[in-house]
Amino acid sequence: MIFIDVDGTLIDEDDKPRPFVVAAAWFAIARKHQVAVWTGGGIEYAERVARRLFPEQDVTPLAKDPLALQYGDMVVDDMLEFVVPDGVRLVTPETFVEWALA
Image 1: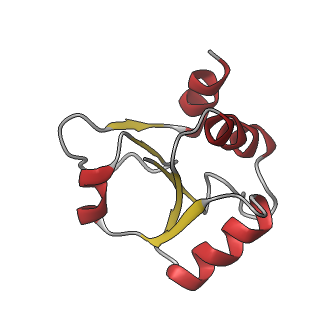
Image 2 (image 1 turned 45 degrees about the horizontal axis):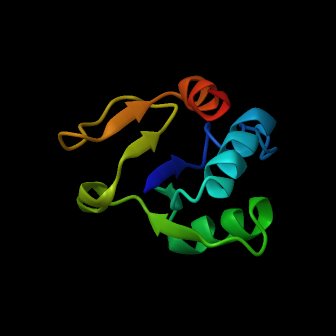
């Protein structure tokens, strides 16, 4: 599963989608990766963002919970200030875009 942060990662400070990051997420979905939209803003906020950016897609909305990362392969976040389990990649939005286009 790929966990993608909302604020500063999928959307900018003006609540506008970051198009290259959203497109990279769509590429991941098309390649059959499980994608989770996760945020410190709570599950309802994650659900709204998931519906807005990925309508009718099987995207999992989650409130940020470090315990969930044990099921992940990658975490995409503009804040690289937390620890992820062994085997989970923590990447910037820019690195995620590069990964998606590779």
